[in-house]
Image (tube, rainbow, N blue to C red; front, side, top):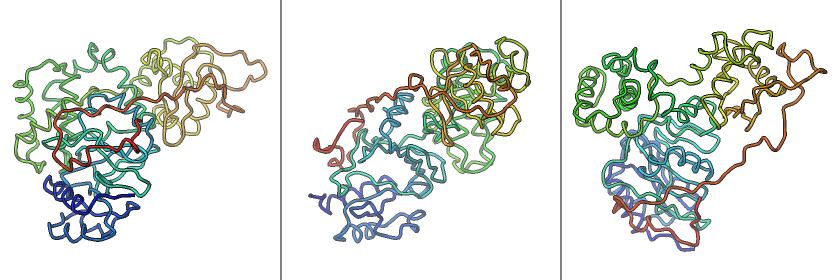
Length: 434
């Protein structure tokens, strides 16, 4: 097959470098051709780039994430369905960010304060000096890395890395619940705003060490937008609050220029979708401490099991027609019991017919449940409420959620970067929609 000519790679490497992004050469197997640890903290010179891309075995290039590239972070989706689920959950973000189509999936580019790579079941979050192959690299399989959404003319947007957690990741089960209920549960709820003022939100979101500025600005945006119901406030009003926050944060943050803080806040404002106070799983378990519905909880002898039943009822009510997420780790933490105990209790509720496991979880993701609201008659199993393991979990194929493929966001005409125009085009022979 034909690879890009080295002058094209060199030109693209120069253009990446001009944007403040570190690059290294890779071979046809996507392996770096140089010892790139030093380039995690230093950017190559023009001479370095020429020397690298004049090599006969230089078939592509990779960007270096982290501080050396202005905080560049790459969310690698190896699974196209996982990318589709994420893009469906965050359509505005998926439209706004640069996205690279790879041989197996997609790379989503943004900037953040992330300092290390995190592995996920559907890929990984690359940061802190990790590399990511980029356009216009060809793989020897015939696949070329190409832009689905091109780089913007200006800076790459800053995002909170928690927005890129897997949809079914156990650590983001609460985040999933927040996303489902943002408009209905938080916009009119006084419990999330009456106890807070601008001063308390500022105090709660001040950074305590260098490197936290963007993340804390994102939390400030959440607190103002939802907890204080300032979603319709004028920019001038918000700017005054951000200036106050910036003044208090100055002793800690490294970025002293207020313009940078204001610009980062505006980017965070667009991406803020949940209140600062949002903790649906915690709120459900807190609400389950009191006696109340459902009455079926009274059919269990153990107080903590009764509370678990009430919490599941609350989560199901908030989820509406959708399943709710709950991991045994979350349940154990809220109930103050060992994780194996919470795991057995959840299996018990499934075996008793009170819950249906729509999508089983594992050590990486939370289980999705649907509430039935009634117990099955089980005369031959009188001892199931004592916390002992049940013999099996329902495997009825009819209760499994079907996996639905979704279309990836379409490339927009806006702000097409001049960076490597050849890389924006995609060969119809190799390109396929997710």
